[in-house]
Length: 442
Image (tube, rainbow, N blue to C red; front, side, top):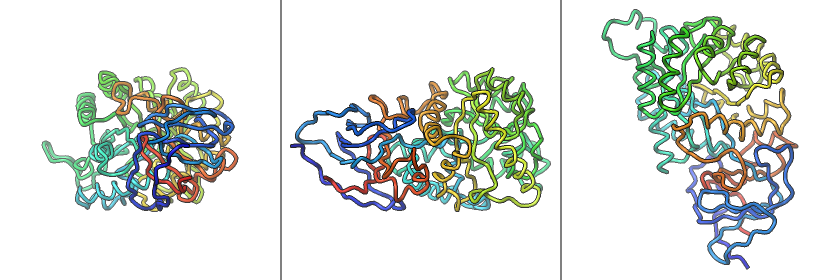
């Protein structure tokens, strides 16, 4: 007989649950999606000790006492999801609040959204812009619940670039004038010229950035830059790349167009965010350099955040290019990561899993799930010495971190299960801690 620790069964996904930590947890009778395979395993057992997946097998012998048992009832055990382009501080924050709210208010709202992110099954995120360092520390110290965070800090932008959040009346900038609101809160920082880019890059690394994010071209939601505008010179990119390399990490850039992507690649940038307007020459160049494409399902569907005026025209250009960019990625076998890039849109964050399911427009369900687990985890490893969580994630393997979802159903056969995490994710575990359990103890 194996003793079973009593555990409170039902925790609504929208609540702030009290985490339950056990020295050992045994998932019995589960079918495993390991993060890489195209199909589920036969029923097995998975033993978690502390925060590590210790054993996987049909026969696992455990002590008579001190092991918490979850009967998986033939449900699917899979790695926690990873969003490779998230904005933990800014996703659920309307733009006007960033410009007007107290910093404390911004942090409280972000903490609430961090819990919601975890309850959607996203146990890790790569944060691509925003003042997220304090939130990351609070999560790591178990002050608030949330995913593991790989932070970039402020987006580094040229004047008039994608992360220039100034108002028109702030221009021209007076010599020695103070920071704009967007810079002061750490949303974006303006740097012009190699010296300034090097300085701002080093500052974000000092604050705890695990990778740097620069704006290499025009954006949809930014008001000053047409989508075709290339931003930063090769020399300026090289300054950021050198700073990142000295810290053992890498540079990622916001870029849509061939010119912006190619200039960044020539300077040694390793990850291209978006890329919807790339051409064949650019895709071939990315393949030759081994660069990553970190992209999103930007199409004109119910999950799109409609822009207005000139920004709407830019949005339509990007949406029209998404099919071609994924076709080129497959043709040239690019390393592809997936993220949502939800920004300033509190109504959209609940769709995080549904946006992942949308990727089946271009990839088979098993490939989509692999992208959001194993492949995104591989991208996170580019942080090298700056990796805040050294260890294996994104897989169900012996020795990996215990970031685990138990899904009521088979997400390879029905990927829409991940679009309704409140109902279908019956257990959520991060770092060996149970944050949600809808199953009664056996």
